[in-house]
Image 1 (spheres, rainbow, N blue to C red):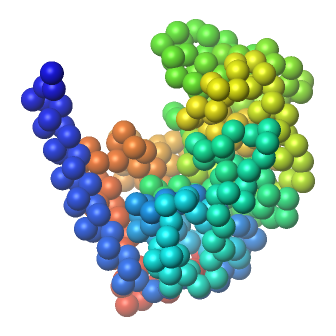
Image 2: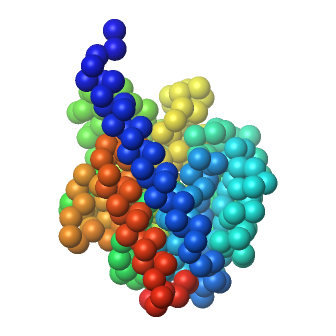
Length: 314
């Protein structure tokens, strides 16, 4: 039986989702993005329902860090109308089909196409993966520094977090029995046992905002990692939602100079404070209140102001 509490909670989420949807339509009145000059590729995977949110994420970020290339890996739900909207606001955008990024040794779906696209573009440039449910509130100095140094970065889950060895990764996961009920925890518990290269590292980060330095070996690393993990836990389980984030965490942890972005300066809305620079509105926290709507309205108003010039790189 559905409880009164769960009904109220659902109604609240529906209301805040509706308010946000109404608010982000204003992004369509903001100026088109100009081609940037910073040496990186900004890549996202976008589905139809997130096109306007993506434009907010993209334009709020590129206000401070405007790349030479913008790439969208289009979910099959993206139609011709969506493509027209994206091209109108980003004339130089590169729209790629998700089906272009598949490999027989890699699962399909669950954002794996996005990770394969990152590997493809990283062969020739620095790549930043930006989720559509993010908002950049102020200049991300740490990210600009990482771009300048061409070193990796990743969103963390807590303050003072660091890269850790695979042994520590597995020990931590095995100590959390409840956590192993999720594919991420289960995969991490097995990670030290699959024969990955000695000295390999890992980070319990978030794939929603990640910087990958140029690498001609990244695809090889991904194929090796995926093959070993699939062989350990089974192809069906390795294809479940959440495994792409595990692989992304492994790749970025072993990339050149990777650092975790300071938390909660870069974090989720539940830890957002006056120093917030970048906010990731993950699903469980997206529409629990009006924070996503208000944050989106604030950056859209900034883009709509008379002194705003799209595509500033500093």
